[in-house]
Image (cartoon, rainbow, N blue to C red; front, top):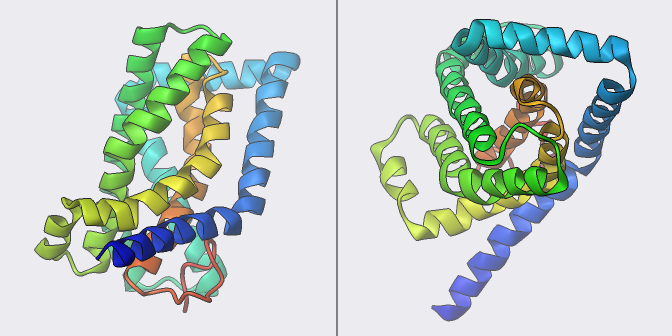
Length: 247
C-alpha cells in the first residue's frame, strides 16, 4: 500500500509538473505582458490615467462590475476562443450549455476573489511595500488557493464533466482526491499565479481585480485542461493546456 501511495504521489506531482511545463511559454507571455502593464502604470502618465479611470469605473459599479468582468473573462472569452480556434467558428448547442454552467461559476468566483482582495487591503493596508505585497501573496497562494479556490474550481468542473454526479462531490471531500487532483492543480497554479500576484498586488487596490480579470482567461483554459485530463477526456500524450477543446 505504501508503494502504491508513493506511486500515486509521483503521478500527481508529475501531472502538475507537466501542466506547469506545458504552460511555461504562454505563462511567461502573460506574466511579461502584465509586468509591462505594471511598469507602464508607474512610468507612463497616459497609461496611469487610463488604468485609474478603469479602477474608478470598478469602484463606481462595485459588485456589478465584478460579476460581469469575471463572467466575461472566465466564461465568455474562453468559450469564444474554443469556438474560433477549435470549432472553426461554428457555434454549437454544447457551447450554450457550457456557458449556462461557466457564467455563474466564474461570477461567484469573481465575488470571492474581490472579497479576498478587500480583506487583504483591510488586514495589510492599501500600500505597496515588499512586506505588504509578500503578506498578500502568502494569504492568496497558501491560504485562499489551497483551501478554497483550487478545491472548489476542480470540484465544479469535475462535477460538470461527470454529468453532475453526486459521487464526484462525495469523492471531492476525501484526502485521496485532494492529493491526486488538487495538488497537481496547485503546482500548475503556483507556476503561473505566484508571479502574477506579485504584479497585481503591486498596484493600488482598485486596480487589482481588473488586472486579475485579464489573467483569468488564461487560468480558465489551464483549469479546463487539468480537469479534462483527470476525467480522461484528454489523453496523456495530447497537446496540453490550450488544446483542451476538440471538434
